[in-house]
Amino acid sequence: MQNYTYCLCVSGNLGYIVLQRLRDKGINIVSVLTDSHSDGIVGYCEQQSLKCFKGNPRCLKASNWLDDQLIRFDYLLSINYLFILEEDILERAHVAVNFHGSLLPKYRGRTPHVWAIINGEKECGITAHLMSAECDDGDIVKQIHIQIEYEDTGATILEKYNGIYPNLVDEIVTLMEIGNISTTKQDITKATYYGKRTPEDGGINWDWQKERIRNWVRAQARPYPGAFSHIGSEKITIHKVSYSDYGFIDITPNGSVLAVIESKPIVKTQNGAIVLEDYEYVGTIKEGQILKTI
Image 1: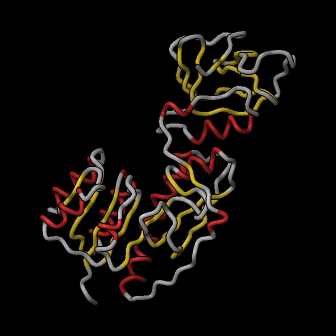
Image 2 (image 1 turned 45 degrees about the horizontal axis):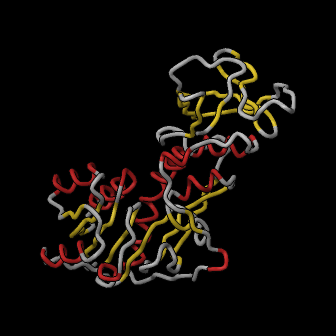
Image 3 (image 1 turned 90 degrees about the vertical axis):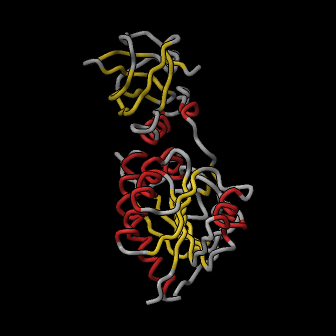
């Protein structure tokens, strides 16, 4: 079999897992592009003597680096990479494939599995697709469907991805090398796009229904920064809630602490009560206090 060469664009733990897997399988990786915060990837490249560009690749930065290093490659693979690649990089590859954590064309953009949980979806998935300079719009090579279980969080979905991504990448690499890639065009009429989330986006609106609050909380639970609210000026970060049939008067403000039972506050929402099962707060929460997002 011909010794094809690869450029890997990878970020985070998921990117590191796939990079290590392909390296262990003997894939000829001639260059790695990563972000400046993926220390594990950078350290692994140094250990393995892999040429590595770290930082934003746009505005010809990575392209000029590839030229300076005299690097040429046959295929490009993008896994959990933080940046959208421009044509100056993509045109260097015979085939460029991105592995995106949603069932495209739904949930193009950032942290799609988190948005899927927030929106109450029953499944998410992974899509291998051809790359263009636009975000997640290339023809689909393969999709894997993953059920979102009732207790799943953003973190547990990532754990599932960690086990599935490497096998899917292996499969696509084999298909590329034997020239057996077939594709299906995305239906752009069904495309949705979601942007980057930041820790500041995690505020809870207590006028939401309890189902939305529960999804909001579990999507952003540890190790993510977490959904949050405030009691007075003190922040409370909430990682898990459950439903409660605890009673209340309808004029009671949403966000009110109805009771505290075994150190677990019960809080009123728009359509019922929830129990704060797992939270971080510096003080003691008392009945009658009101949670607000400020």
